[in-house]
Amino acid sequence: MSDEMNREELASAMEERRREIEQEFRPENMKIVRKELFASLRDPAVTIRNGNITFNTACINGLEDVVWVNLMVDADAHMIAVHECDENDQQALRWCIAKPDKRKSRKMTCPKFTDMLYEIMGWDKGCRYKILGFRIERDGKTYYVFDLNVYKIFKEKPKNGQEEESSEPVDTRKGYYPADIANTFGVSLEEHKQTQEMSIGESFVPMAQLTENSDA
Image (tube, rainbow, N blue to C red; front, side, top):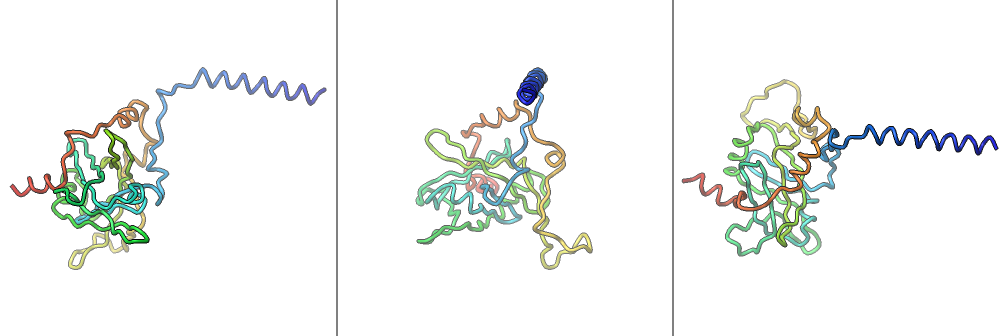
């Protein structure tokens, strides 16, 4: 009998606590934790270096059988996106190496493009930047969209002829986040909602068009 009463008392106490939490819970005051803080090698991502960009294997596999893509840029929103295109498309870029038994990522050399990205973002050319990709369906097309405002930074080894800033060896494998990401859990519900409603439209332009305009 006492065991049954203890169970009832425990259930009553738990229900009372649930009601207290229900009263205190305010979703609008909470932060949605950034996925970047839990990122793994299985997450689609692009790595941008001074002179080239590389989409990782997870990203390549996310667009099955796609070899040729359009790379698009929204310079105002600081986003880039890729989607499948035909090999004969005027702006087609080969983003992977396709073999009969497998596909793997490919370093895409594009110094003019990365020069503009580094300038727009105020990035350090002595570093590379890794950005997670998010799969978005829009108007019957599948895109991977990358928010350049949220990135992980990796130091690069100095090239031949360049002086090292420190006598300490450079660890190129250890990345870190900028303070506004590393020191916060994430974004508010309103910010998250705005991100989820991001549009892919006229604000994006093909990478080739952007680099052509820079030569004018």
